Image (cartoon, helix red, strand yellow):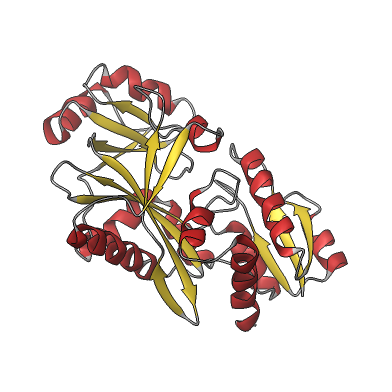
Length: 309
């Protein structure tokens, strides 16, 4: 099978995307004719030249993970790995995704959406009155924790918002929730979505969290497979991850990130429709914990896409 692996682009996560895409190409090569294609203005011509049977987008952030490349591939009729245009656009929008999940009793934190053009100092008072002074500030549509600012002990909210608004137009504000960082991967096989083993993320440096640097720096974090927790909690985490995947219309694979608080109550933070495939990424670790090695995982995903032709 000829597989075009698309990576790179112009997002802040482009370099990470290239690393992921290289891993995917290497994983496919034992069984398939796989080639890397950069996400740039020459992409259409390069796809026509290569004539792939399947396209594997390995794009992180915007544009690419937001439905843009998915819509293009749907229009030209090329089967591709992963969620379609509508699900991709919905999943990367943290606010809209959480509105869907909340309507279906998946636990999400209270939130406020702020717009750069309309917010004011009065907004800060409203946020603190409704959410408290300890908050997490997140871009509405961004991945890999880029642009996230945490105020775990409260602080100057206006100053923090000013800083993040310099590079983002809309922000999601949530209460800061202390707890264990948990991720649950979902993989579809034979049309059925199921959860892979739960992973707890432990950042090794004191006083740090799972930010962009600690996600991709070798040795900065530890992935604990099947961490200790009550059976009812692990069952709930898996059930919520599969439900989050299906409710948004996701396809093939996803990874949902949670905070597990001191009462073992899970809170769904976000879903990733194109999980990282770098050497430090979580999805390959979860698949391996289920007994699926990386080349087998890549083969399964491209065959999923081919079967939808």
